[in-house]
Image 1 (cartoon, rainbow, N blue to C red):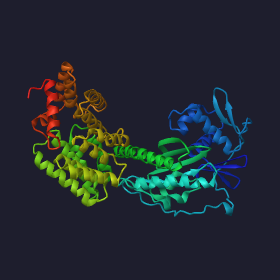
Image 2 (cartoon, rainbow, N blue to C red):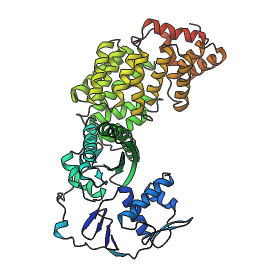
Image 3 (cartoon, rainbow, N blue to C red):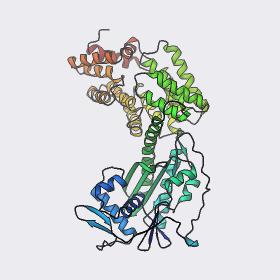
Image 4 (cartoon, one colour):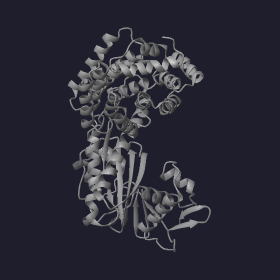
Length: 521
């Protein structure tokens, strides 16, 4: 569908606005707003309508909405007080009042306006794992000398995302062929065989830089994440690095969540390797029964013998069973964990997740030096994977370096604020505070972890120990009883003998807290 008005052509299929034969640069949100206003020109569109249609129901400020309306007016030459095309209706909303005709047949484009690039019409087969194309960011400030900045942000995001082995990232040479062209994301998905498209725009206004970014599910055309960054322009390269890093770190959990939802929409039968992997992570996050998670991890590994991630997570699962006290043969299971971690590395030497899991195994065996080396290796391979930072933080906590561990744990939490590793990260932050004898801070973190993740058993006994150290005997006894009720096997593991990853003095401090909470060892 194409809408023609006031010498403009608004091409919905190509997501393009032209004035005569010349394309008019538009931010994606501004295009969506203009298209919605034109398509619904027979009535007044309320602010709520625009929020639902353009921002997918997200609440936006009056200033953001006003800025978008103003940008749409500027794009079609409707600036000033005339409001000849987009009219504000007091206390009601907006209405497109220009005269519009519609076309469904192709519009002739003069030869000089033809696209500089052509994309092969045959669609690619989509890879099993999530795939993403990062488009060249639009330089909407109009100054061609700023092109390096907008291109550089997109280029750095591509590089950063490529570190993550769970993603299939389209190369710059392919995704930048759409630069300067308004192309529907569904067409891009067909052209490149991808599931997600990241698009953005950069505007420099004096000493301010504004970057708008949006991650779109290319199969549905729906945005799943969007953000705006406003920064001072005095340190251009620092701003460049800050924004590209922030975008990359926000995209990864957004894609992970979308992929899990995608897998959950399919039944548990006839799953691909990637879908089985997502089901495994979902069951793992429940912390009540690892048998389903183990089954799906094995299905994923069998479906794709080169898929390293299921082997890495099997290592973590086996370690969890040992330390929760639910495994009848802990020595054998520790051997299985080491075998799975090393298998993952053999399958994919560049997998940060695989090296992070080997770091966990080595730490649980008491080999802290090699464990820390593996954690550092994991971080160097993929600095945006929280598992490496969590492994490093844990090793430092149990090495008597809780203060240094804090940065690693905080970064892991920032990278995965609501994901699988969140409760473990919070728990180790609390453990660090406890071993530093900051019992009030430990209590606060353990309580927050239990409130947010009540099915996660690890913080319960440590909350009791912290309350015992604080001399709050009644609260400590209640917390101890709760810990034993939630997971008697985990409590029994903690009091049975000093685990290899504990320093003896730290373990004695923990037992001291249990005794003050009412445990009679």
